[in-house]
Length: 48
Image (cartoon, rainbow, N blue to C red):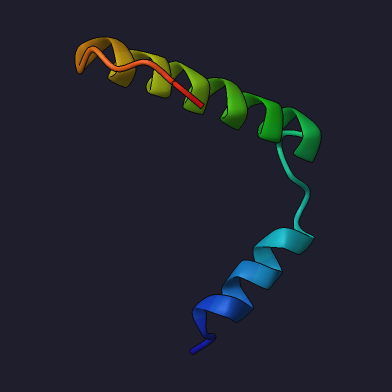
């Protein structure tokens, strides 16, 4: 039985349905939206 690492490596060799840069941009967008919603919900602001 292959380990999780071996399975992950095998999966990486398969053709990805979305280009890596597009996936990263999508992830950044989602995280930004989540952060905004949390800040609004808990009445927080980013003070840097």
